[in-house]
Each structure stands twice: as C-alpha cells, then as structure tokens.
Image (cartoon, rainbow, N blue to C red):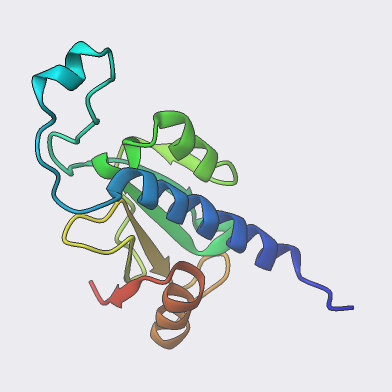
Length: 147
C-alpha cells in the first residue's frame, strides 16, 4: 500500500480545482454568436470576460512558498470557485509580491491564463529555479518563466 503525503494530496486537489476552472472558463475555441432564437428560448447567453485583468491573489507564501494570481478568466467559473481554490491561503485584492520571486507558472495555457502561480525562495517550502520549474510542470501542467 502506497502512502501519500498530505501535501501531495492538497497539491492534487489544487491542480484538479485549477484545471476544472480552466475547462469551465475556457472550453472550446472561438464560438459564433448564438442566433436570436436561442435567446428567445430562455437559454442564458454564454458568459465572457470583458478583459483578462488581474482580480485577486491567493497568498500561500508562509506554508507553500507560492502565491497565485487569479485573472478575470478564473472568475468565469464563479467567485466561490476562486475562494475555494484559496482555502489554505489568504485571498487579497492585489497582485502577488515580487520580493524573492523566482518565476511564474502560467496555468491553463493560452495567451490569457486563468491563474498564474508565483514561486518564491526563502519562504514556506523554499524553491530554487529548478525545483520551481519542475513543480510548475508536475503539479500544474503549466509553463514556467523567470520574471
């Protein structure tokens, strides 16, 4: 029987939450506008972000050495989902700090990510550039870049 560390389970839960939000927020490609008949049937029009501006961040520096910026696209799945994704951190209405920043992991791809995870040295689980890049790839299936 294989024993999993709690941190692995939490990371897996975070990954599932982020990816499910990405799927809900970014399913499909470019879609054509729905005809007027569909709106007349009472079906709601699909939600679309006006922009992909930064809306909040989830500070998990103390315990995990990370902070996650949430953009408009992340909020398409609902504010409650964003709050749930930050249940172990502190949700703030400002971007992640830049002190001791090693780099960013863009999650959910594309030119407009839903989330961007920032990795730090000297806090919580202290990363270096190599371990941060590996965590980005392994835990979030994202792309890592230095600031």
